[in-house]
Image (cartoon, rainbow, N blue to C red; front, side, top):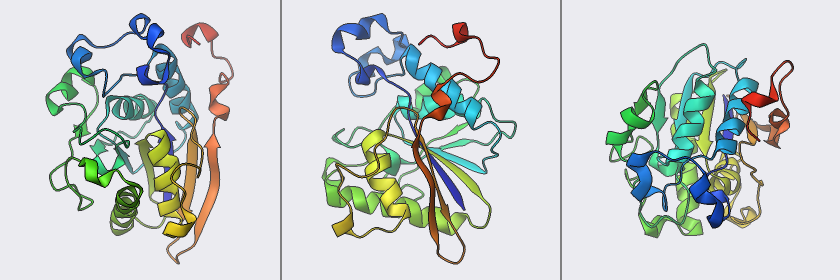
Amino acid sequence: MYVYIIRHGQSRGNIDYSLRDAEPYHPLKEELERKDPSLTRLGRAQAELAGHRLSQIEFDAVFCGPLHRQIDTAAIVMGHQKKKVPIEVLSDLTEVGLEGYAGTPKELYEVLFPDTEIVPCSDPSPTGGPGVIPASAECPEGCRVRGRRIVEYLKKRFSGSDTILLSTSAMFGGAIVIPALLELTDNDIDTGKNFEFINTCISMVELTDDGKKIVHFSNDITHLSLPDGEDSANYPF
């Protein structure tokens, strides 16, 4: 099984507060922006470049957390795919520090992502956790449990050459998901310092059927240079 992990593109939460009014957002999400910021113009351009980079890879399944920036990044990447698969939302993939926030409301999915099939997270989640992550699960120990739930779920559902994409956030993707895929012990996991994640960086971990774990690359941002033949006007950096 090949597991690709991508951090979302730059969001309104990643930029200086004074610049946020200059960035576009969907009017229906205005009240949600503080907890659930959308991608900036740069963030969407980053996701487009990541999608171009991943366009030659055929994903068998795509998962993301319930936050707008995570879903939007996954949707943009999947827009470059020939094989269309639904984006499945897993509550366990959400970022930390949101105090039980459920994520983008399901009723906004069709409005915000009209061309994308999105499967909302059930309660309990397919991973066995709750449909909404409580604040009590955001401590380091709770995050490790979440990461291991995700990995166990993937192992039960996929194997062999199955290829999976996870769209997640910086701290949770780099400090929790990759260590969980590698089966690091609690003593080996430092939730503040593990695999650094830059906006739309891509990592890939292979889990072989005989139990081997191979990191092919981590925090790769080579796609953030323009593809051959692309006009820079299409990417508003």
